[in-house]
Image (cartoon, rainbow, N blue to C red):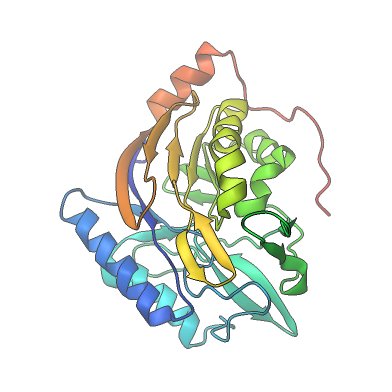
Length: 276
């Protein structure tokens, strides 16, 4: 138990309406389960409700309110664990971008708050995109390593992908899977998405599960898609390309350990990173 794990990646085009988004997610999870015994499903950033980036969604998760329960019920209804996907969350007077992770019975697992907030100014380019997440969100302040079914999973969100020290920290703590739930925009996605995802896998000889939003969400935001699973050698195992959909694959510790042994990699703290 725990040496192998069948996972599914679900790529959708989230709208502001949570009910519409959950309906699509449930559909793809059930479609995947008809083909394989899926244990864990990885979702993209802000899968629950996608705002236009200038203000928070009105559908904020708070404590165990109806929105929290709606996400929890995805796990319970489908009898699968949820890992990596995020929702805008109100904590006091602040709004944070938080992963929501549950086991197959709906029991909460450890969560992570996005540390690195995205900022891009592409005004004057073809996309004319200007986004500054700090206008909407408050950043998290610590990494979170999730232990699930004998696997150690380092949690990350979108812009975190550009900060290798976060993932190196997870590697030093024994991580075998690294997540990047994302809403990568089209220009940055075309330029950097695959390169960065593969780099994080190669650096850390770890599986990287990078699930992205796809398509036109509103007049201000268009995302790249191409959700990916990359193995510890840096090989792209899955790439969902454009469009909504799902894919599945079995992760194997034996493969990970062989690659780490081949590269003579030992899990140890290469350097000290202070996240306080």
